[in-house]
Length: 445
Image 1 (cartoon, helix red, strand yellow):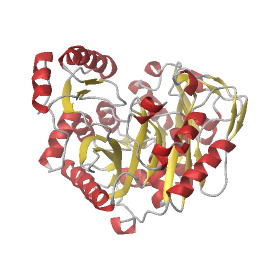
Image 2: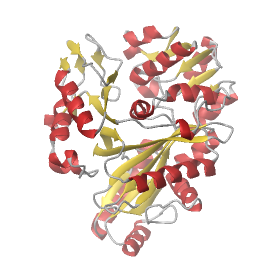
Image 3: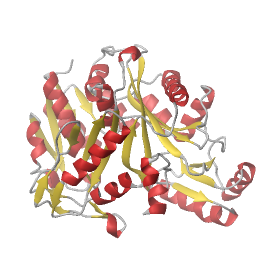
Image 4: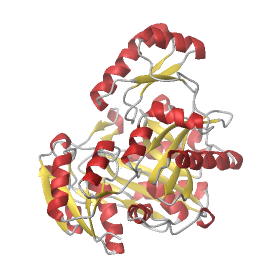
């Protein structure tokens, strides 16, 4: 096992990794920008190294500075967390070439599966359902219109690289296709440095369900069941839960088996998530693999009792998974709300600033992951998420009631947050009756 690792990330996920490492007796090195210099969570690391100014492009995305920090910190491995460089295949390759184990998949698997078009091709080869669409990259608007006529509008134009809804546009007719195609290409080029797009048939009112997996280098692949991420705003998840209330047991078994099959086909190891869209008839279609730990991983941890960060570290250190599929037993129902520094009454505008009062909830079945505290200043330079509130209950009804209680208990002053809107969603009959779909929040609120 590693004696010392560097965490190439910030905020909540960095703190999450520090905590598991401390339990395992692993020392940690934290990197930070000038904007994060006074952040209290850094005190949980054994060493702190500044890597640049506030902007992520000048600090957290600087591969050479992170590698230099790893050398100064005398570490054996680097954990990328989520976001930032976590799915950068070049970064993974550089880490290993410089003698530091990358706590994640191989750079070859990451490059292959990070390109959505290549991942779709692999899924088809493995016999896993994919959304009907183009066979590969679509080079022109004219070709896009021809494909849209073949599969019938509406269609999605999607970037082959990246995620988070960037480089994605919806078209209902030829006129919309002409504008949306160019917009998707330009946005993808600007966001990911790759303007390639492909086209998929748009599934009306879909559900979004993903399967959490962990695989070791000995060929063992275990799933931790599924998470439902249907409650989204502009492709950004707000509420996640497990088990999914939108699928039956037969679909659940088939979806988890398909996810395991794809990971084995790709020769993938470490943590990963296979994402699917599900239509009204519970037909599911592969959309992408996230080659990293995800924001919502605590949902799976509370459902199964598995520490996914610990599992990642074991796999990266060359050890076999200490559990098999038969050991993974889901218990109860789990819901997570992402607490964002945003104003839901003004189109979720960012709300940076100093937190003057901070009193998070607690009690039975409540977990709160956050690096924030009273006096902390939410920076405009970084993602607006300031914490994740996760609750478990014996069943979905109890979990909803517990989450509403916990959100009502939460007291934050000095900034606006997403809490009031999340309470609105949790009380809404569409959510309570599991009738939601991915565009529900935009249409209803």
